[in-house]
Structure formats: structure tokens, C-alpha cells
Image: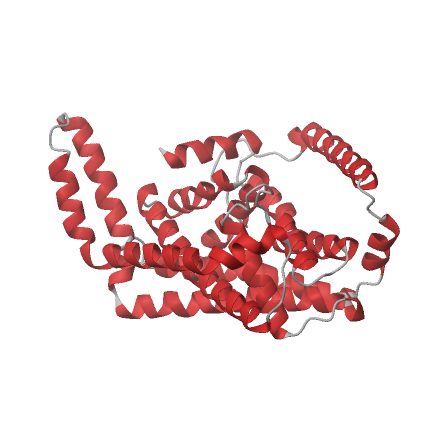
Length: 356
């Protein structure tokens, strides 16, 4: 049984919040339905696409999606070895589920919930876990850029034509990928080889602070540097790279299952799926001018403008990707959060505290 980390957890007390949330969700869905009809969206085709789904493939996709969270917990255990060599998997997995639930509900600011909860559960400095979070983001970013680079190369070599919304991606995507990859590798190199020198110089530069404030800053800086110590170990660096590739292999497997769930309606081979996943990963990083970001928007855009999939089918694919890769974890995350004594208000408080 998972012990409560924060006092006050009770599911019954928050029933009215779930009712209000359900009413708001139904209202939003109604507005989306009216707007889609105004745009000429054919709901019958959308319903047909969903009614013909092969559920075994979707269930398998859900298994792979949950496995990605377990994989992240295993990788995080390597990241925090310098401060907690024997971190409990249950603590890391629970915090990961709650953390990604917070991301789904709060957006990107929810990213800070997971390192904060891990720090509380494992009794380590929050700054050390923010360092682990930064390293995790860098590793994921590099793989995402690698997959997108492959997708970009495949599209260009095939001579496929893209709509106007994706033209700028094909024109400048390679340069942007190279720039972001260079910056990410530079940051990783600086962390790996020069973290101690940067620590000394930073503390020397802050020597003018009053003794009490300087002591607090020194503890934060030291904890952060200690949190990135995992990159200085060759074995740990190898494991981080290996687990990152395995993580993305699970994500790829999830995409394969989702596309196969549509059967003959969606003829995607392995290369097509990699191209699709690469563009979606890139779109999750970069906001598309005039359109915005988000996995759903990017998925629909790539399917319709690059693969020329009908809008209704593309919408159903995007919906399933969002549900399986993001929303599927929310019910379990909310239950775990309530069991830990966290509700919506406390999750937002945790997010703010983690950034301090």
C-alpha cells in the first residue's frame, strides 16, 4: 500500500469537483461539435473510422503507453544515483504517473510536479531532481531530433509535396534541428565536464550576498551539481542512452499499434510511422506559426497535408494518440494523487514550489 505523502487526501470530499469538471468537459465537447459542423466536418465518417477500430491493437497500445512510464522511472533511478543510490521504484513510478497527469491537466508547468514529488518521497534536495529532469529532457530532445531528422530526410528523398502549413518545416527544419541538437549537446558537454568549474565560478560571483542567503544559494547549487553527477560515470551514461532508446522504442510500438488499429483504412508501413512520429515529436517541441502546438493539432496537420489522409480519419487518429499517450494515465494519476493527499489546488501549489 502506498503511504500518503501529503495530509488531507480524500476522494469523497472532491466529488463536486469531478461533477463540475464533467459538465465543463461536456460543454466543451458540444462547442467543438458545433464548430466542426460549421467547418463542414462529416461526423458520419469520423464515427465510421472509430467504429471500425480493432480493439486488441488499442489494448496493446495502452500496455506500451503504460510501459513508457515504467521505463521513465527506471531511467530516473539512474539519474538520481549520486544522491540516492537505492531509490525505490514504487516511489519513482508513482511520482511519474502523478507528474504526467499534472502535465496533461496543467500543461507544461506540470513538468515540475514529478521532480518535486520524487524529492519529497526520496528525501533529497529538490534542486537535485530538477537537475535530473533537465538531463532527462536533453536525452529525450536529442532522440526526438534524431527521429525528426530521419523523417525529414525520407520526405525530401521521396519528393512528397506538403501543404503550405508544413512548407516552412521542410524548408527550415534541417537547420533548426541542427541548431537545437548543437545547443543540447553543448549543454550536456558542459554539464558532464565543467559542472564543478561552473559551480565554483557561480558561487564566487555570488559572494556579495549576505551570509544567510549565500548559504541557501550554495546548498541549491551544490545539490544541482550533485544531481548531474550521473553523466560523469561512463556506465551511467551508457545506461541513460540505452534506456532512452528503449523508451522511444516503446513509443514507436505504441504508434504502430494505433495505426494498425485502423486496419485497411490507414495503410502505414514502418517508414511512414517513423515519419509521422518524427513530425509529431518535432511539433511537440516547436510551435507552428499561425496554428500553434499540441500533439493533436500536429497529428492532424501531418496526416492531412503530408499523407493526404481525409480530415475525419486524421482527427480520429489524433484523438486516439492523445488519449492513449496522454489521457490514459490520468485516472490512475488522479487516484494516486488523492491517495497521496494531493488535489488540484495542491498540485498547482507543488508546481509553484518546485520552481522556486
